[in-house]
Image (cartoon, rainbow, N blue to C red; front, side):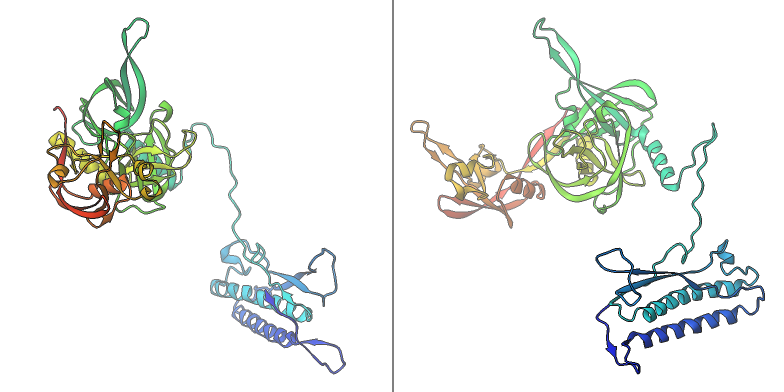
Length: 491
């Protein structure tokens, strides 16, 4: 589309003439030259018809209305067509001369466009806007769409390559996915008899060939008995809770099933946003359900539903995850484990397209600790922290995001040995003397408990760290040697 005010100059008869007419002659000359070249290449084939390029329609438009007007008003549009051939081989209607046919067809398209341009320029001297022809079916022929027919009975549906890959992934991974039922003893308020009742269900997956099954801790929390079933196996297996990490919402079970098949492990550190993912689980008790989506985000932070401590590096996905999917595998397009489905963000409790999965790189370290050593270790400071917001309630707006208040310091712990001071309350008068307020952990600023826990997760047991605390009106730096929190489990 060419836009701009017309330029006029005097003609011999006094009739206004547009400066665009010489341009029309130039464009037309190029088009005529191309047409002659195409015809010369076709001389080897006497049966070849003429170029066959012509103008079949002229439409006149005017801004602000639908009425036709003079050619000299506003703009014109022309459409140039080329006769359609029956195939790519015979688009010039001369299948005998393959070389000429292949080379002249692009020339004919260019010629058609140039002739259209010359027509528009020549016939619209007063136009302030010129519309060139668009690529339509008449200019660029395409093959006809296939006709759909009914599939005869007994004939399997033909799948495309993507569908075939999805079906294969589900068939390969499903035998490794477990349906877990949490049973607890509920005492009747009338007879005082205890009855074992299913109180929840979730998903797990086989970790290795020794019968270890990984799931979320909140799926098995408080269970008196855990029942596990697998697809294609009518038997219900009783599972034993081998160990867990409630801060990271990971649990490991052991099932006495001889022919377990583990899911191959992938890497969450190499994931990319937009990558296709698959979730297999038991939403609402519908066992072994497959949903698909993409990686919607990486590096999310999710508070643990058990302790409130932050879980770092969480994968966000739009694959449908619903109650019952918790603990199930999140797979890449090759069927490798990249995450453990754990939570959703939804005001209704059902999937809203925002699901979260624990990254497999983090889960792997926890699971191996539990299986090999029967325990989970974590670095600790040995402190009792006040809830976020308590400092603001005590000292006002100056306490907002001002650090983490230390409530108590257990004796013999790392913080007690370093001289950290806790909050003291006068039991007689009720006065409160604030303890240390942690504002920095090494070089990391601490505004709330999540910042402190995040820094702790990056540290190692036995590491020397520097805490910056506000004590009274002064900032004090304290050296602390991190201790070890050990959660042991029975073999």
